[in-house]
Amino acid sequence: MPMPATRLRIIVSSVQKEFATLRRDLKAFLLGDAFLRRFVAEVFLFEELPASDQRADHVYLAEVERCDIYLGVLGCQYGHEDAQGISPTEHEYLHATKHRKTRLIFVWGTDDSQRAPRMMKLIRRASAELVRRRVEDTNALNAEVYASLVDYLDRRGALRVPPFDTAACHGASLQDLSRKRIDWFLETAQRERGFPLKPNTTTKALLTHLNLLDGSKPTNAAMLLFGSTPQRFHRTAETKCVRCHGTEYCRPFASQQIYTGDLFEQVDQARDFVLGKIDRAVGTRAAGPTAPATYELPPDAIAEAIVNAVAHRDYNSNASVEVRLFADRLEVWNPGTLPGTLTLESLHGDHPSVPFNPLIAESLYLTRYIEKAGSGTQRMSELCREAGLPEPDYELRQGSFVLTIWKDWFTDEMLAGCGLNERQVKAIAHLKRFGRITNREYQHLTGAIPRTAARDFDELSKKGLLAKVGRTGRSAHYVLNRKRDVKRTNRTKRQTGHEQDKQDISAS
Image (cartoon, rainbow, N blue to C red; front, side, top):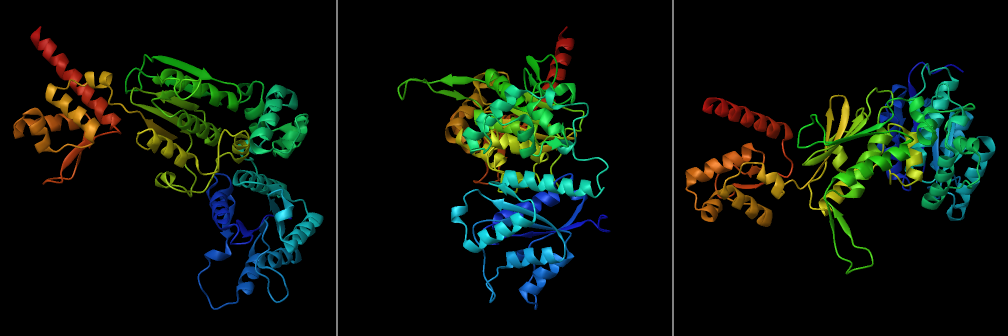
């Protein structure tokens, strides 16, 4: 069967009320995935149609006839029944069958006791006619849809080069996988997510279940997740961790480590690297037998930033994941870019999950290294707010996606190196206590005349310590600049250093 003359049209069929959010997120995934968007031209959701003078059933059945792939998600609800007692979802399925469309069916959940009787009947019918897969969450659905579409495209000769995570790992065999890691995965996934396979499941059976086999060979994703020595096959699949002395990325580094091994190991080791280098305050045992420890950066936010980079990086890139720890911030560099449906701004709010490597992301989810799809960036923001820190920043820089988590950098040590006068030190102390200060308050606090106050504020602003809110009048005030303009601050330092060098030369 030849490929369609145009790119694929996919209709997503399910009960709209039950799967309202899931349908939108699935469409975003299909159109946003770096690989799939090369082949998918249109994803039809009935609820997105504008009002028109046509019968609804005529519209959605016509769309079934136009589509190349019918993608059905069958849950608990059956949906509204017409005079014949048939729901739109079943009408669409029957119409797709009649017109010999490719049907991809996914059954949501494993508890059939809650399903409507007619939905159970439809599921049994579909099970008798084709191979369907059960899914329990968005991560699993993305991974299963991804694998099914790659298989569809491959069988029709559309793939000259398959996507990285589904392609066979060149030169590798099942013997190159670590049975110890697989046993750990089976135990952990069963404990954390109720994974259905038993601890003694064979390697081949597990990889088949996770769509990590290409014929009889392990895929690239399988090697990265479970390989004994993954870097033998993927040299740059590593995580570089660097601690810098100040706020600039320059040698000599305070410490440096490159972590290899499988992806689970890399995430654990990189997280421990950061936790071992940042400040930690240990409390008392008043509330329990163990003294609580408070880190200057939230540990869960650190782990989330690292695992996101490992899960979503572009493994075709020659670059590696980089974790850079500075005096005032943590940067995590992920080779690659954002999916086409996401923007940097959308990461701060609710957004769909568009994993760059869906099969890798699914295994990380099953072991609870990542949580609900699309929630990672929001969770990091919550953790930072709870710790009294600014929300993380997201950038696209030099071919990489860069995530920055800011420390509370207004420490005594940091301020001591800023060359502040006594008045400015008092102002910073006031701001740390009250959050804002006006020019008049500064004069009253320090005894400075207006011209001196203006000059002091100008210096503090140029050093990146303060930000002005409002232009003039009583509403104008200054606040601490919790997120420094690193480039400007470093440039100011260099300029100050050059001026000092000139003074030293003149004095000599």
